[in-house]
Each structure stands twice: as structure tokens, then as C-alpha cells.
Image 1: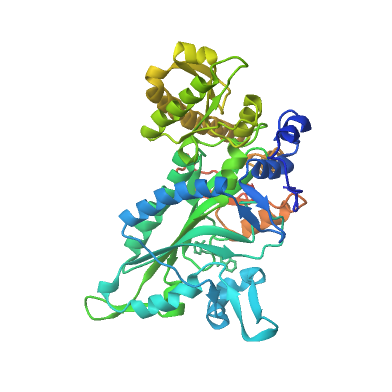
Image 2: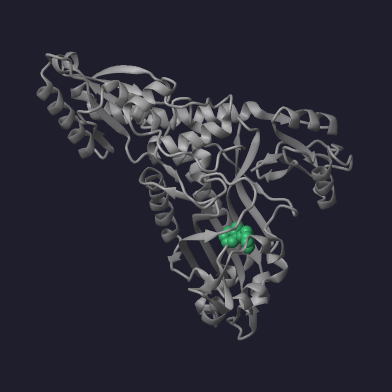
Amino acid sequence: MAGREQKKSGGGGKKKEVKKETGLGLSFTKDENFGEWYSEVVVNSEMIEYYDISGCYILRPWAMSIWEIMQTFFDAEIKKMKVKNCYFPVFVSPGVLQKEKDHIEGFAPEVAWVTKSGESDLEVPIAIRPTSETVMYPYYSKWIRGHRDLPLKLNQWCNVVRWEFSNPTPFIRSREFLWQEGHTAFATKEEADTEVLEILELYRCIYEEFLAIPVTKGRKSELEKFAGGLYTTSVEAFIPNTGRGIQGATSHCLGQNFAKMFEINYENEKGEKAMVWQNSWAYSTRTIGVMVMVHGDNKGLVLPPKVAALQVIVIPVPYKDADTQGIFDACAATVATLSEAGIRAEADLRENYSPGWKYSNWEMKGVPLRIEIGPRDLANNQVRVVRRDNGEKTDISRVFLVEQVKGMLDKIQQNLFDAAKQKRDACIEVVKTWDEFVKALGQKKLILAPWCDEEDVEKDVKARTKGEMGAAKSLCTPFEQPELPEGTKCFASGKPAKKWTYWGRSY
Ligand code: 87F
């Protein structure tokens, strides 16, 4: 995706600029230039400000509020599972980072280092965490002694730094990002296996119930899994405009690999020495980028009501000789009624902007519902409600305000999910042969193909599809498997197929 690095500032600000540029507030359309459209939406909606270090972005309150809503949900859910929050340092000593050598090898170029304090070189350079296994697990080794210390379930909400070199994109690929990382240790593999799926279900919930984005739960191939772990599960989303899959979040069973490396041992009930089973799981601010890409349109951002900091914006529409004060009072009363009912509502009473400008501005910011109150509405004790997702206008009596608005927010939430699912499903192509696969890839499809599940075959698929657009890879083997008739052959190798697997280009 294109996306410019240093966008000139401005855009969302003054009334003239927005109106004059295109009449829409955006100079690129989603279908014609997706990359530029995306950059413009995240900036003009006031979610992101570009920063003077490439790949780093300022998360403005409009973005942060979405993150916090998801965080509140997820944090409460993991606490129900007895996961405790903690905070480990951002710095990693080089020794401990090397310990994970085999697994860190491929990642090493992305690790950022602090080498100086002031003018003098540090005696030993210090790494900045790209993830916290090596930071945390030495202490797991220290804290876990007996079976009574298990399970140990910790999570931290933090930032991580990965010095990416390819194509930085706000939310999707940034050099610093926010996430939660959960790291748990159990006495048995069964407990670990169970938790992997419980967490994955929470991730599905974040995407489908909060962000209104359909995802596929599944297992990663041997090539695509976290190399340090036993197996990796993920929720996978799809961006129809670019025809790319995107990993939404991951839940790994680490097995005992790290336990061996970091000597995370304990004495079991029989007094024998045993090794823990571990999991790790994470979702990041990438979720917000996927939301923008999936739901945004040519007027800007489209927020699903459940993650919108502001669900309803109330705008007075006073005509010259109308009862302006009466209209403003009605706006304030409307906000009060909605707020009391737990609906996140505000009035835009700024007098230096026209109603029309405000409409575009709040559309750009993706607020799910706009309420307009003009003289006629005042006279009829009604308000006009306009949906952001489909532009539908309805006049509703103020008597039924709360129930109607609640109903509409629910409808918008559902409609966004249904529309996104329909679009995603329309991109799914079931293929059986290599020729069909190549054709579907060229058409930006999300490909479902029977596969022999062999690592070398996936490597071969990557090699054979290498090019400007990036190679195709497996996205996941969905847990929900269509029937695989006896004798079905692998699309790539012709060997007996073992699983239906999703393939495509990806972020
Ligand atoms: C970049 C630099 C160094 C990903 C990296 O998925 C190390 C790594 O280990 C690295 N990029 N990874 C894999 C992260 C695995 C795992 N960590 C905890 C997760 C979930 C949360």
C-alpha cells in the first residue's frame, strides 16, 4: 500500500479548506487510490498525526478512545479468567535477548538498541523490547517453584518497538505500537490448550462484536506460526480493496520450548521436577487500522457504535429568524436525555461553523448518528436522525428518543458487520488446482484451497508467486472445515490434501 510518509499538516481544520478541496473533504477515493485514501482518512478524522520519525505516529484522542473501549472490555474479560496485570521494563539486556537466539534470529534486524547516554557510549548497549518473552521469563523461572505457584497468568498493556523497514502504515505497520501481551504458565498442556482458545474467542469478539469485522479463527501453518512456540492460532481478517489478508491477533501455545530455555521448572504434587506449559497472546492497535480499512468510505471514517467515543452528535440548524435559543436548548436537552440513558452523545454548538460544515466534519470522524434540530423539528417536538453508515434520514418524536436511538445504533452495528461480511465472502474463491489458484490471486481473492499441509510445499507456493505485489502465503487453516472428499488433491503439490486452508497476499 502506498501511503505517504510525511503528510503536510492541516486538512481537518478550517471550514474553507474542507469545502473547497473536493466538496467531500477527501482528495482520494477508496476505490481509486486506497493507500492515499487511508492516509488521508486517519489524518483528517483526527485519529493520527504524522510524526517526524518515519514509521512513528501520534495517536490522537479520537484513536485512543477506540483503543480504550476495547481495552476496557478485554481487560475485564481476562480478569474474569484470573489473569493479573503487571508491568515489566521496556529495556532488555543483550544477554537475555541472545538466550532466545534461535527464535530471535529472524527478528534481529528489527530490534532497536540504546547505545548512548548523552555523549558517552553505554558500556553495554540495551535493547528496546520488541516483545517481552526474554524480559519476563527469567522471572517466571524465579517465581514458579512449586505446583501451588501455578497457573501463573500475567498480562501487560504496553508499547513495543520493532524497527520495520518495509512500508510503514499508521496502525497497520508502525515502528512503535501499543498492545497487550499475555504470558501464562500451566502445569498441564490441557490447561494451556483450553486457554489458547478462550483468548482466541475474546479476540473474535473484539473484531466481530466491537469492530464489526468478520474474522476467521484458525491455526497457522508450520511456516507462519511463531517459531518459538508449539502452535499458533489467530483470527484473520481480509481487506477487500487490496485483496490482502491481515492477521488480527494471535494466541500461541508455546509448549515447553521457553520453559526449557529459561528453566521454568517446578516441583509437582509427587515431589518430582516438572516443566511448565506456556502460552502467549496479543492484539495491538492494528485492530484500529483494520477497522478504518474495512468500514471507511469516501466521506471518511465509519465507526461501529460499540467502539465510538461519540455515538451521537447533535447539531442545531437555526435559520435566520428562528428561535435560536429554543433550538440550542433542545439540543442540550437531547444530549442530556441520551447521556442519561448511557448513550455517548454531545452537541456541536460552535457558532463559527455552518451546520453543513459540521455535517461533513462529523461524517469525516465517523460518528454513527447525527441528530439535526431545526425550527420545524422544534415545533413538532421531533428530531431528524441521520445514519452515517447509509445516509438514511428519519424523523423521530422526542417522546421515543432513547429507545429509537438505541435501536438505530444496534442496527448500524449489525449492518456494518453484515455489509463487511458480505463483501468479504464475495471475495472468497474456492480453488482446486494451481491454475485456478494463480487466477484467483490475480483477482485479489481470499483463496480457500485443499492443501497437503507440507512446509516445503508452502515454501514452493511462496517462491512461485513471488513478485512486486509480494508472495502468497497461507493465512490460516480454519477450525471450521468444509467437507474434504476422499481423494481430494493438494492444489499446489497434487499430493493427498489434508486440510482446507486460506491463502492470499497479506499485510
Ligand atoms: C521482532 C523482533 C524481535 C515478533 C519480533 O505473538 C522478536 C520478535 O519474537 C518476536 N516480532 N516476535 C514474535 C512475538 C511472539 C509473541 N510474543 C508475545 C506474540 C504474542 C505476544
